[in-house]
Image (cartoon, rainbow, N blue to C red; front, side, top):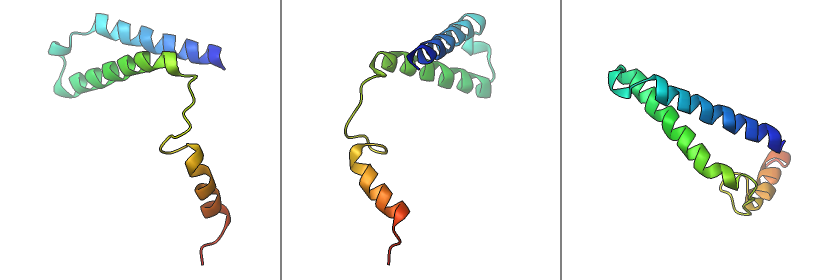
Length: 80
């Protein structure tokens, strides 16, 4: 539901904010710094895209309308 998505996004952003406040990336090991930067980038990207979560795109590379019929035919009918 939309309420669950809002709660999930709030949890993600709260966790990212706590990470930013609690850790200095300069003091972390290279592996930990990489994990920090990856999580931070993912949280920022998620925040920027969240307002558009209800937008439906007709042409989506993997799950758009144009891929449904071929996927159905491939999965249901044997290719001879």
